[in-house]
Image (tube, rainbow, N blue to C red; front, side, top):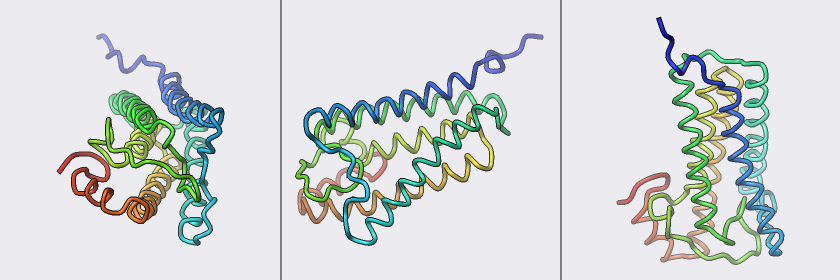
Length: 199
Protein backbone atom coordinates (compact mmCIF):
# COMPACT_ATOMS: atom_id res chain seq x y z
CA UNK A 1 0.00 0.00 0.00
CA UNK A 2 1.29 3.41 -1.00
CA UNK A 3 1.36 6.15 1.65
CA UNK A 4 0.03 9.63 0.77
CA UNK A 5 2.55 12.28 -0.27
CA UNK A 6 1.66 14.27 2.86
CA UNK A 7 3.31 11.56 5.00
CA UNK A 8 6.68 12.21 3.35
CA UNK A 9 6.82 16.01 3.25
CA UNK A 10 9.73 17.71 5.07
CA UNK A 11 7.59 19.67 7.52
CA UNK A 12 10.57 21.21 9.29
CA UNK A 13 11.75 22.72 5.99
CA UNK A 14 8.22 23.84 5.09
CA UNK A 15 7.66 25.49 8.49
CA UNK A 16 11.04 27.22 8.38
CA UNK A 17 10.21 28.43 4.85
CA UNK A 18 6.97 30.01 6.10
CA UNK A 19 8.85 31.74 8.93
CA UNK A 20 11.80 32.82 6.75
CA UNK A 21 9.51 34.34 4.12
CA UNK A 22 7.39 36.15 6.70
CA UNK A 23 10.23 37.65 8.70
CA UNK A 24 12.22 38.26 5.53
CA UNK A 25 9.39 40.47 4.28
CA UNK A 26 9.11 42.20 7.68
CA UNK A 27 12.80 43.04 8.07
CA UNK A 28 13.36 43.86 4.38
CA UNK A 29 10.53 46.41 4.56
CA UNK A 30 11.96 47.93 7.76
CA UNK A 31 15.47 48.18 6.29
CA UNK A 32 14.19 49.67 3.04
CA UNK A 33 12.31 52.36 4.96
CA UNK A 34 15.29 53.01 7.24
CA UNK A 35 17.46 53.67 4.17
CA UNK A 36 14.94 56.34 3.16
CA UNK A 37 15.14 57.93 6.63
CA UNK A 38 11.87 56.45 7.91
CA UNK A 39 11.76 54.93 11.38
CA UNK A 40 9.22 52.16 10.78
CA UNK A 41 9.45 50.60 14.25
CA UNK A 42 7.28 52.81 16.46
CA UNK A 43 6.33 50.21 19.07
CA UNK A 44 6.44 51.53 22.63
CA UNK A 45 7.17 55.15 21.67
CA UNK A 46 3.77 56.51 22.66
CA UNK A 47 3.48 57.74 26.25
CA UNK A 48 -0.22 56.93 26.74
CA UNK A 49 -0.34 54.10 29.30
CA UNK A 50 -2.89 51.92 27.47
CA UNK A 51 -1.09 52.11 24.12
CA UNK A 52 2.31 51.60 25.75
CA UNK A 53 1.09 48.55 27.72
CA UNK A 54 -0.60 46.93 24.71
CA UNK A 55 2.46 47.50 22.53
CA UNK A 56 4.80 46.14 25.21
CA UNK A 57 2.70 42.98 25.62
CA UNK A 58 2.38 42.67 21.83
CA UNK A 59 6.19 42.82 21.57
CA UNK A 60 6.56 40.05 24.14
CA UNK A 61 3.98 37.95 22.30
CA UNK A 62 5.47 38.49 18.85
CA UNK A 63 8.97 37.66 20.12
CA UNK A 64 7.83 34.65 22.14
CA UNK A 65 5.75 33.11 19.34
CA UNK A 66 8.61 32.63 16.83
CA UNK A 67 10.87 31.31 19.60
CA UNK A 68 8.32 28.64 20.50
CA UNK A 69 7.72 27.92 16.81
CA UNK A 70 11.44 27.35 16.20
CA UNK A 71 11.81 25.18 19.33
CA UNK A 72 8.82 23.10 18.18
CA UNK A 73 10.42 22.61 14.77
CA UNK A 74 13.84 21.74 16.20
CA UNK A 75 12.41 19.17 18.64
CA UNK A 76 9.67 18.00 16.21
CA UNK A 77 7.10 18.66 18.93
CA UNK A 78 3.75 17.94 17.28
CA UNK A 79 0.46 16.28 18.23
CA UNK A 80 -1.59 16.71 15.06
CA UNK A 81 -2.34 14.46 12.06
CA UNK A 82 -0.29 14.78 8.88
CA UNK A 83 -3.21 16.08 6.78
CA UNK A 84 -3.64 19.05 9.08
CA UNK A 85 0.09 19.75 8.87
CA UNK A 86 -0.09 20.24 5.10
CA UNK A 87 -3.12 22.51 5.60
CA UNK A 88 -0.97 24.44 8.06
CA UNK A 89 1.73 24.95 5.45
CA UNK A 90 -0.83 26.29 2.95
CA UNK A 91 -2.31 28.58 5.63
CA UNK A 92 1.15 29.87 6.59
CA UNK A 93 2.07 30.64 2.96
CA UNK A 94 -1.27 32.43 2.55
CA UNK A 95 -0.37 34.53 5.59
CA UNK A 96 3.00 35.37 4.01
CA UNK A 97 1.32 36.48 0.77
CA UNK A 98 -1.29 38.60 2.57
CA UNK A 99 1.45 40.24 4.65
CA UNK A 100 3.53 40.93 1.53
CA UNK A 101 0.56 42.50 -0.23
CA UNK A 102 -0.14 44.69 2.80
CA UNK A 103 3.38 46.11 3.13
CA UNK A 104 3.64 46.67 -0.64
CA UNK A 105 0.32 48.57 -0.69
CA UNK A 106 1.29 50.66 2.37
CA UNK A 107 4.49 51.85 0.67
CA UNK A 108 6.21 54.31 3.05
CA UNK A 109 3.10 54.65 5.23
CA UNK A 110 3.77 51.29 6.91
CA UNK A 111 4.67 51.42 10.61
CA UNK A 112 5.07 48.79 13.31
CA UNK A 113 3.23 50.41 16.19
CA UNK A 114 1.29 53.64 16.48
CA UNK A 115 3.37 56.59 15.28
CA UNK A 116 4.05 59.36 17.76
CA UNK A 117 4.90 62.21 15.39
CA UNK A 118 5.14 60.70 11.89
CA UNK A 119 2.49 61.85 9.46
CA UNK A 120 1.24 59.12 7.17
CA UNK A 121 -1.56 58.80 4.64
CA UNK A 122 -4.63 56.61 5.05
CA UNK A 123 -4.23 53.68 2.65
CA UNK A 124 -7.49 52.23 1.33
CA UNK A 125 -6.43 50.75 -2.03
CA UNK A 126 -5.06 47.38 -3.11
CA UNK A 127 -5.57 44.68 -0.49
CA UNK A 128 -6.89 47.39 1.87
CA UNK A 129 -10.09 47.39 -0.21
CA UNK A 130 -10.83 43.97 1.31
CA UNK A 131 -9.30 44.23 4.80
CA UNK A 132 -8.61 47.18 7.08
CA UNK A 133 -5.82 45.18 8.73
CA UNK A 134 -4.23 42.81 6.20
CA UNK A 135 -0.80 42.91 7.88
CA UNK A 136 -2.34 41.65 11.13
CA UNK A 137 -4.40 39.13 9.15
CA UNK A 138 -1.14 37.90 7.60
CA UNK A 139 0.40 37.54 11.07
CA UNK A 140 -2.64 35.55 12.24
CA UNK A 141 -2.60 33.19 9.25
CA UNK A 142 1.15 32.63 9.67
CA UNK A 143 0.73 31.83 13.39
CA UNK A 144 -2.18 29.47 12.71
CA UNK A 145 -0.32 27.82 9.84
CA UNK A 146 2.81 27.05 11.86
CA UNK A 147 0.62 25.97 14.79
CA UNK A 148 -1.10 23.42 12.54
CA UNK A 149 2.29 22.12 11.40
CA UNK A 150 3.71 21.90 14.95
CA UNK A 151 0.76 21.72 17.31
CA UNK A 152 1.72 21.53 20.98
CA UNK A 153 0.66 23.29 24.20
CA UNK A 154 3.50 25.86 24.21
CA UNK A 155 3.07 26.92 20.58
CA UNK A 156 -0.71 27.02 21.08
CA UNK A 157 -0.33 29.27 24.13
CA UNK A 158 2.06 31.72 22.47
CA UNK A 159 0.13 31.76 19.17
CA UNK A 160 -3.13 32.59 20.98
CA UNK A 161 -1.36 35.21 23.11
CA UNK A 162 0.09 36.83 19.98
CA UNK A 163 -3.25 36.80 18.11
CA UNK A 164 -5.08 38.35 21.09
CA UNK A 165 -2.40 41.04 21.54
CA UNK A 166 -2.45 41.86 17.82
CA UNK A 167 -6.23 42.27 18.07
CA UNK A 168 -5.83 44.65 21.02
CA UNK A 169 -3.25 46.57 18.97
CA UNK A 170 -5.79 46.86 16.14
CA UNK A 171 -8.31 48.38 18.57
CA UNK A 172 -5.71 50.95 19.69
CA UNK A 173 -4.82 51.76 16.09
CA UNK A 174 -8.49 52.25 15.21
CA UNK A 175 -8.76 54.94 17.90
CA UNK A 176 -5.62 56.60 16.54
CA UNK A 177 -6.85 56.46 12.93
CA UNK A 178 -10.25 57.88 13.90
CA UNK A 179 -8.58 60.77 15.75
CA UNK A 180 -6.10 61.37 12.90
CA UNK A 181 -8.26 60.93 9.79
CA UNK A 182 -11.74 61.54 11.19
CA UNK A 183 -14.58 61.21 8.68
CA UNK A 184 -12.34 59.69 6.00
CA UNK A 185 -11.53 56.75 8.27
CA UNK A 186 -15.12 56.45 9.53
CA UNK A 187 -16.33 56.15 5.91
CA UNK A 188 -13.65 53.56 5.21
CA UNK A 189 -14.78 51.55 8.27
CA UNK A 190 -18.31 51.51 6.86
CA UNK A 191 -17.09 49.94 3.60
CA UNK A 192 -14.46 47.41 4.73
CA UNK A 193 -14.46 44.87 7.57
CA UNK A 194 -11.75 44.86 10.22
CA UNK A 195 -10.24 41.56 9.09
CA UNK A 196 -11.72 40.48 5.77
CA UNK A 197 -14.58 41.47 3.49
CA UNK A 198 -16.52 44.44 2.21
CA UNK A 199 -19.91 45.66 3.42
